[in-house]
Amino acid sequence: MKRYHPVLVGLHWLLAVMILMSLFVGSQALAETPNDDPRKIELLRAHMTAGGMILVLMLIRLATRLMTPLPPPVSTGHPLAVRLARPLHWMLYALVIAMALTGMAMASAASLPEIVFGEGLAVLPRDFSHLPERTLHGLIAPLLVLLILVHVGAALFHHFIRRDGLLQRMWFGED
Ligand code: HEM
Ligand code: HEM
Image 1 (spheres, rainbow, N blue to C red):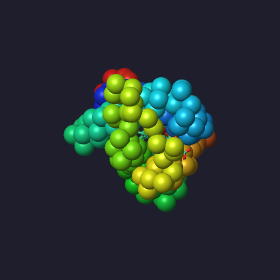
Image 2: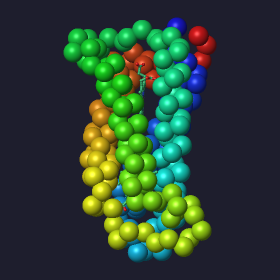
Image 3: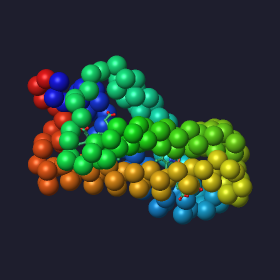
Image 4: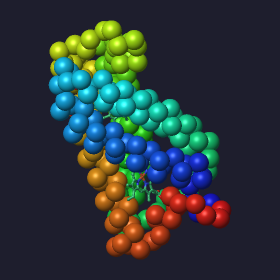
């Protein structure tokens, strides 16, 4: 077993694109658009749909991860980095799932499913800042960004400095 299961590989890259886009659109477009702007409903619809899909795909990925054999740990030469790799991978799962769940909790507290996907009669609240779920969603986002930066940094370190072929473990191939 030299690489991750092809389902894990395919979903890893699809989810990476979807998560980075949600982080970007969420912070740069959604949060910057006031709730009385007519484009807000459209942005919410897209963000909530993408967020819900991320949750479903991430749970499928988690189940696959628990059911398939893993490639052995790769050494960086730093014992601490070897020890940290697995816990940091689990934290990526935890923070992505926490983002999606706080988003859904916020949406349900503000009746967004009815407003955004309904007949178009109900109006949005002035903003979401009074909701604790909104605060959590906004706090977890930069933590996830930070962890992704560490993750990508580690992957690039392996690829360009250690030249140990780590990226190939997250790509399709024999075995
Ligand atoms: C943006 C969101 C991303 C998330 C949430 C994410 C998540 C993960 C997780 C959880 C693992 C552990 C393997 C598993 O449990 O299946 C993993 C492995 C990996 N990721 Fe990512 N990843 C992201 C982006 C990236 C990017 C942009 C790169 C490349 C620069 C990358 C490169 C890798 C590599 C090479 C591995 C395999 C590590 C190993 O062989 O142990 N990831 N990723
Ligand atoms: C992993 C999936 C998700 C990511 C990465 C994500 C990311 C973000 C980000 C970065 C923001 C802006 C935070 C800020 O600037 O303080 C945001 C806001 C928001 N997100 Fe998400 N989100 C996700 C899932 C969801 C889901 C599933 C829902 C609802 C069903 C949702 C609903 C919202 C709402 C209502 C806002 C607030 C917009 C505003 O304040 O006007 N999100 N999201």
